[in-house]
Image (spheres, rainbow, N blue to C red):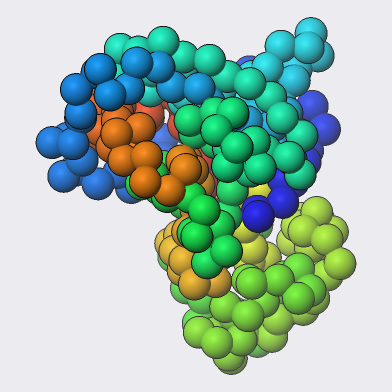
Length: 272
């Protein structure tokens, strides 16, 4: 499973207070899925399962309300397919079992597409991939080239998939390991390293508070074999009507702008 990660304290207030910026928008849904919508008699309702410990995707806000990108997305999917929708919260270590036991129709909580999970579940199209990106000081963003970092230390979280990426694809870079991503990013801010490379989504929240000093530089790197397949929705194996309905809705939500709206709302500093 993809273990839920608590991002930064006060995520909800940051997201609501921060402006949106011009940015590249994600598009991962399979356009062929628009032909897949089954008869609604096959899918009278979608019972979504989720967790409440994975901000900003699914969590309880200060008032106790279940909120997040995944929660909004699940509701939009049900509206698009025009079926009844419920969202039930489970502890992370019980959520997949609950789906296997037919206590729900779909799990939207960051379940990883591992071979083990693939024996039990089918997965929707990816709705949000999680790329790796460089962060530099603001004055170094324009004209950024990774090759130019050969003589400067680049911060990376020790033992991470992003450290493996640098070793494999950019071996001339002097990768400097840090125990945490926040410590590595603070080193960029302090100017003790030339750049940071790591999970772009988590970096986007740090950048909310540090746009005056730093920003994303260069392109986004998508490497599913290293960074994972991204976020998908799991359904019990063989439940094709539900999966097709979800995939169909993801295409429609991209085409009508709703998916972009959700992305801009929850990720005001985009990571693509």
